[in-house]
Image 1 (spheres, rainbow, N blue to C red):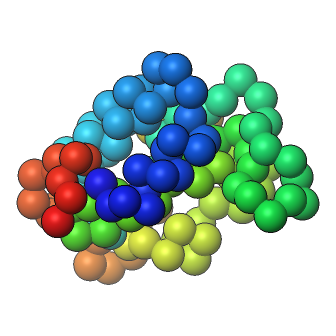
Image 2: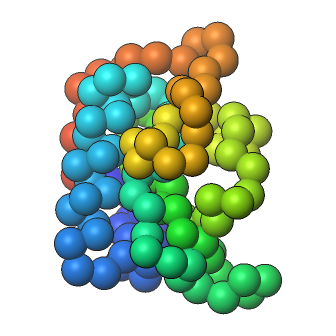
Length: 121
């Protein structure tokens, strides 16, 4: 996990949420690869953060993984658009089963190396 991603997790998640997110990320990467994937990893009980503020806000925890490393974690409202242009990844998957109807992919998406979310490389 990059230092930036660690900071974002500390800012945005509380209690057992970080572990739930990490487990969802591991599962998503094992199934869909970890080269370029956006993961809706967890659904919060309500919106966190202030809408129209300068910080991330929403009820969904989104994780971006590139080249086997978590690059960032942010919040996004489930009512907002989720697509590959938003995640800027080759694959977008909803591990909550509450936002997307199916996995979104474009050519070149798919499995990468085995994923370890604690990789600092």
